[in-house]
Length: 392
Image 1: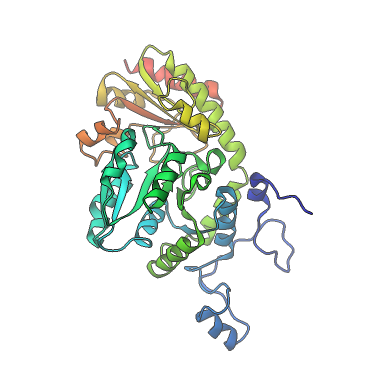
Image 2: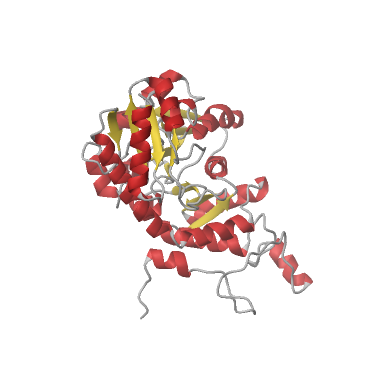
């Protein structure tokens, strides 16, 4: 009997069907549509009687390959790839909820997701109820008859707070909620939420999955019955991933394991160095002993991930001076890149949130988020610590 292959092997060896050219690397299927052998086959395809490629808005060999690899990594039954990470978030809401439904939302979420809930979903009659990450004992009090889904991030962006996935899984089953989680920061290399009962797992593939800041993409993964709804929703609304982006992302997954190991190793070294720096008030990193949820991190994460958050005195102006003092770390609207990226969440990614809401989830004016890249860690530490000194 053939032994089941390891996930990181599957991320390399899963491929679209080889063509008559016997290529070793999968070609890019840059086509809008696919031809049929005869009229009967075309009729059967349009009536969902057979599964064949019809139109790239629906399926494409490159996209199918990327999805198959992600299903293997996350351990899910099915998936659908989208043009961006936010398209994946929207699809997970729009496909599985209807007018009058309410989403229970852990308040500590990505700024664009917050805006989507506040300004877009309400137009479709879908409301949300915010709950505090550190108040899980009282979450049940916010369950309403129309509450249909729980949406969370862990680790959270950008505060790196954690939720106990085992507890969340039991909570959602007890209250019959769809357990929807953004696993972008951890990636399936570090944690697999399906092991704790997650029904839907979403990613911005633009981040660590790509890993080089080259392309946009998103993916929704989960139970087959739920992904069928996501597929139908996206087939009609059109947020399909392009074949070229699918090809790029599939190739990127071949190195995801080793990249996340390097990101995590360097992030821990940077966090450790910053903990003892006199200009740093405090550091947040899941695998630091000082992290308030260190025990949860060790229970459900293999490593601490590639993002470090720290706080400096001096608020917004000090944060700006720090960023301007960096020599090679990039200032850009992304993370999970091979190049180290520094950002100031209060004035960028979460700037549309009211100041009081920012503070309530730990986003202070003096917070800096570092997405630790693949450069030599000595150079990363040197650039960050030098910028701290210059920005006094």
